[in-house]
Amino acid sequence: MLIDFTPRGIHLPGIGLWLDPLEDCEMAWVSHGHRDHARGTHGCVLGTPETLAIYKIRYGQDLSPATRFEPLQYGQSFELRGARLTAYPAGHILGSAQLLIESNSQRILYTGDIKRLPPLCGALSQVIPCHRLIIESTFGLPIFHFLPREEARARMVRFARECLEQKVTPVFLAHPLGRGQEVLEVLCEAGIPAAVDESIARFIPLYEASGFSFPGWTLHPGAEGARVVAHGFQRVLQASGRSHRIAYVSGWAALDNARARTSAEELIPYSDHAAFEELLALVRESGAQQVEVVHGYAEAFARLLRQAGWRARAPLAGQAGI
Image 1 (cartoon, rainbow, N blue to C red):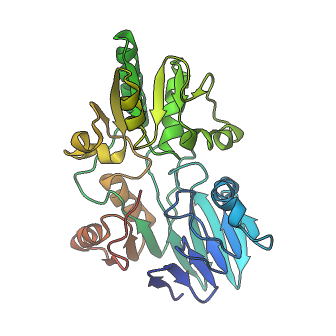
Image 2: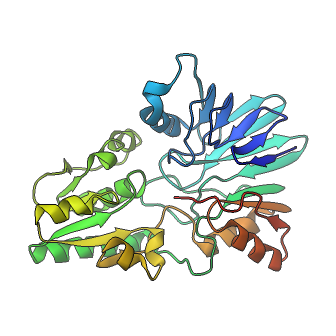
C-alpha cells in the first residue's frame, strides 16, 4: 500500500485516509487527544470513543453539523475501501490507540504516541505483529530512561507529604491532558488534598467515565494541599506569595537542564511516552521488516535502528512531539 509522508501528515491515498493530519481533510484517523495529533476539523473522524470525546471538547464549536464520527473500540475493526482498520491500545493517554491497516495480506501498524510500560491511568499497550511499522520516537535517544509507575507514584507521594509537613505547598507541573490526571489520581489515592487548574480539570469527567477515581479534588484556587498545574501556571503561584516547592513530572525531567527550565526542585522522570529501551523493544517484538520513524528524535532513532540491522528511515524528520 502506498503511504505518502507529507508536511500535512501521513496519507494513505489508496483508501483516502489521513493519519493524525495537521490540516483539515475528508477522513482522518486521530490516534489520541493531544493537540499535535488531534488537529483540524475533518469531514469524518475515526478514533476511540474517548479520543473522539476529547476531540469534541477541543473543536466542538468549530465542527460542521455534517461531520461524521466513527468510534472504534479496542479490538474493533472498520472496513474502508477494501482495507481493514483495527484499533489497539497505545498506553499513552486516555483513549490513545494504535491503528493496524490490513490490505492485500500486508499489515501496516501506525502507533501514534505510545508507551510500553504500564501507565498510571490508561490501558496497557499491546505489541501488534506487522510487516511495516510507523512508530513515534519522542524520546528516541539512549539518554532517556523513565521511572516505572509504582516508583513514580511513590516519589510523588513522598514529595507532597514532605512539603505539607514543612507547611509548604507542593506544586506538580504536568501536561494538562494525560500526566495531569495521572498525578491527580496518585494524590487522591494517597488521600492528599489537591487542587487543579481548569486546563486539567476539564478532562477529569472523561477519565471518571472510564472508571478512574479522583476523590476530593478541588479547582484551583482551592483548599490547602497540593497543586497540580500546567506549564506556566507556576507564575500565578509565585505572584500569590505562597511558599511552595515545584516538582516536574515528565519525560523531559530526565534532561540535565530540566531544573533550570522549569524552576523545579524535584525532577520525576515519568512519561506517558515510551523511553528509548521501550521503543527498541516495540520494534523488535513487532517483527516489522520496514520501520518509518516519526516525531521527536526521528532521524537519530532511525539511524540507531539501521546500525542494529533494521531497514529504517525518518521520512518526516524534524517533527516534534509532546
